[in-house]
Image (cartoon, rainbow, N blue to C red; front, side):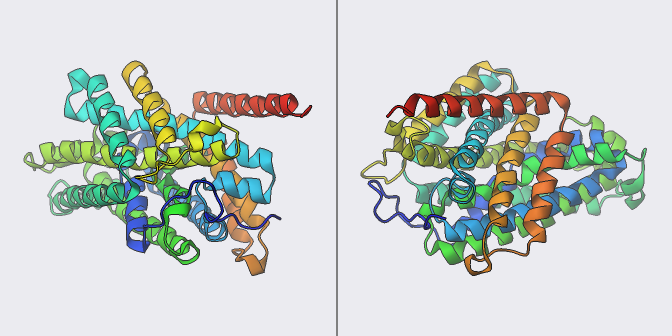
Length: 423
């Protein structure tokens, strides 16, 4: 295996400015975002009373993925995440495929988050607001990763305060009935798996910590600490919110809800909380969008360095020390999709790409030796199997679309190899 890459010796280096706290906050900003405001209803539609079981399954797979990613990130502290791990442990093709799935899937997710902002802030002008949000957050990222971390810290604080208010209103309300947790029709196991796949979308933000490996101080210690902490906090928050919402609405009403947390606040009689929840949802989507643009641009940077994408995108700004061309390209593409596209199926599509990405991460972690910090073998094994099962359990349109995009990427890789072979 090749030696772990380091920022030293690279033509354009990123500054290592982020400590454990900032890395945890960026992870929380990615996970505790718009997903908690939107993913519960479609998951309940799939799983019914099995929603909490689906949440537990998603949590198990997320934990395995997080552990594998943390060990790999400590050994390979460079921008790119699983793109780098797959390349170094499994070969160039697998790294490329992971990076391709991540960039395409998360670009669609960026557009979905932008449109979520628009739908809450100004529904009649959702596309215009979405584009404005993309432009504004791309500018924040362009100004430097430290400024992004500071803004993310504010966003996380606001969202946690809103969620805490909803939970308090639900648990202290006469409308709350613990018996509703088990009410409704029992879901088939396939429905529980599909719910787990949809809920996984909301957990996937811990990858953002790994993709920032080149901008974290002492990554061998910081990343393995930050990822489990961020994931653990998120799991607790999601479980408490899910139990609170189910105890008020029950599985059937939750499945039909278009804005579950708003409906929960209204059902408890706390009308004053409804506009607060709407504002919190918009802020949450902004936080997710901020972190998504950050992560996609870093993976684009890593792929451009290896010439899987145009090498011009590997440039790092001399003053701000960010991959400015990659960020501008990602921001432009997301703005165009948000202005013109319908991304209602983006959650399923993005989940498929991200699960494929983590499948490569778990396969890469399996190849680590004990000296390299390999986790217990059962962790990458369960993670790999879980990723594949949840990906195939997603709605058929998501599976077909995701598989087609991965096949297109693989074909492009093959063509590129054939073109370069005569050299």
